[in-house]
Image 1 (cartoon, rainbow, N blue to C red):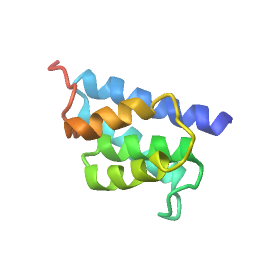
Image 2 (image 1 turned 60 degrees about the horizontal axis):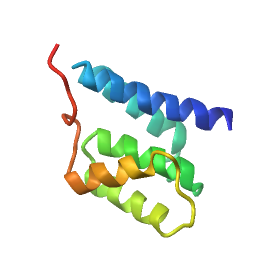
Image 3 (image 1 turned 90 degrees about the vertical axis):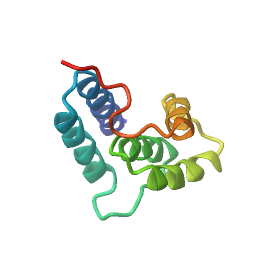
Image 4 (image 1 turned 30 degrees about the horizontal axis):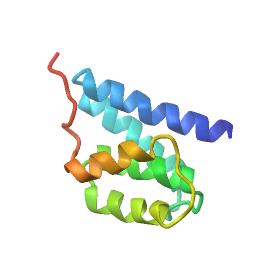
Amino acid sequence: VESLSFAQARYVWGRVLQRLGRPDAAREQWLGLIAELAPAGEPPTDPARLTLLALARAGLGELPQAAALAGAVRASAYRHPLYLELEQRLADGMGPSAGVVAA
């Protein structure tokens, strides 16, 4: 649970950095999150971790990969609190520049 909380905080911190106009720092957070959640390149089977992995991929602009992960979550009965944000980002085609505020 602790690592999941850290992973969620890392995703949210990346969103904050993105909105502050620091896309490189946000990207660094999301890449780190992906490395943590899928160290061997294989996605986790846990829907909570899949949701965070998909959100990180969406933040990086990797929408097809994010959509594939979201499909796996959608097929499960579980919904992470950030799942709705994932679906909204995918529906809106929101990539890495979405929500960025000029500094």
